[in-house]
Length: 510
Ligand code: NDP
Picture 1: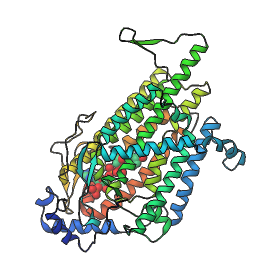
Picture 2: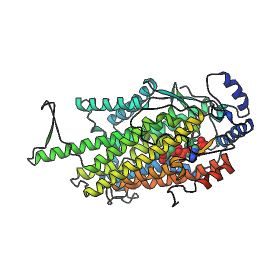
Picture 3: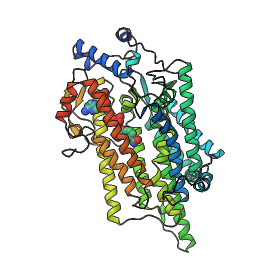
Picture 4: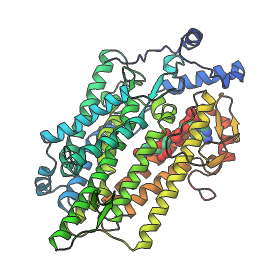
């Protein structure tokens, strides 16, 4: 395992800058910021180094993160069992018979191990080998301002996945419905894998002395991570686990559920003596049953497709994000991406499928369903364009902007000559486009999408709303954390930014 060195000396930052000016990697100051005066830039560098190296306990410190590391898998198992054996209704988790009834639905099987690990391996191989654009990350303070290169081939691997899944399903080699048939065991394998990778990465980072910003508390460092830029060859494992695994699995779970639902409904019609309607192509050469999946399940397929597709098509924006730039690769990112996101954000899908299996499919009045489709698409538009406006603005600033044509490029995704605040730090804070309306409007749009995933299931179970409620907590925490960091980094300029853009989530309200 070739791990990127974390041992850039803070003191050596200036020297590092000079040395790297002669090497192939880009350093502070970026081409765009070179125009700013030297005092401002070195002030910015020092502030970045100070922010990047400071250890302060979050999530309740060692005790808090220990509780989270034990609590997450238990909570996921609890909700899964409620869905599997109790129609999505919550049950007393202290009752032994609850776990006795539920445990068999999630015991890892050999097939689940093969499915999950082959998927991960295939994703890794394609991440390492498929063609894609290369973008530079933002200068890493602990590496003396070095900018790492990221191969962004997500969109190529995504299209390959879609074609392969279709071929495997149609040929009968791997019907996609196996995913939901094996969902409990696969989830257990994913959780075990998340823990295994967390512990393994922590040990490797310590043994190879590649640790960064360590607190000295083992549980805390295990949770937050020990290493900042874990790499195998050209593959950045942090970006790989954040982009390639969770959202693709999430989409394939929903696709699997929709195909399964379709099969059940066709079967029911045949059993009732009804001949299901056919779609005929090429003058009758190919005939398939008309889609019989419920609208709510189709909604989930669309919702998860949009999310997964957005991550792949906009992958070049990821290297400049907080997770890649600052967060280390620990339980928080590892477990959550390998297991948490795909197997807890899919609850609405599993609930809808289970209702259909129990012959109590969820359907809503047409106007309700159409409204949710409109809300989903509108929120997606704001989320996609707000993220791309800011990320492209930052990429232009760092000289890493690359023009993309991956589908769909939405209008207003790139701002031309937007307003901004030039900070003493050297960076610019965008105040144009969506970013002039509210400081975290992309969070609001993301939350609206999360809410729509719950609303499409109706109101009989809390579990499909778990993602929405959990996500509120995550984003509120992120807002507070980001505010503190930006205040520290930008000082009075950040106060001026908050004055110019006073609203956080909803323009003119709060
Ligand atoms: P942000 O996109 O809000 O990134 C915050 C950073 O962006 C700040 O620290 C600052 O960094 C920079 N920034 C903030 N405001 C401005 C501005 N006006 N102009 C220029 N730069 C600015 O946070 P996240 O990385 O948390 O979120 C990215 C997306 O991912 C969101 O849409 C979020 O909803 C989504 N997300 C989804 C999750 C899920 O589980 N579904 C989980 C977490 C996030 P700098 O120091 O460079 O100035």
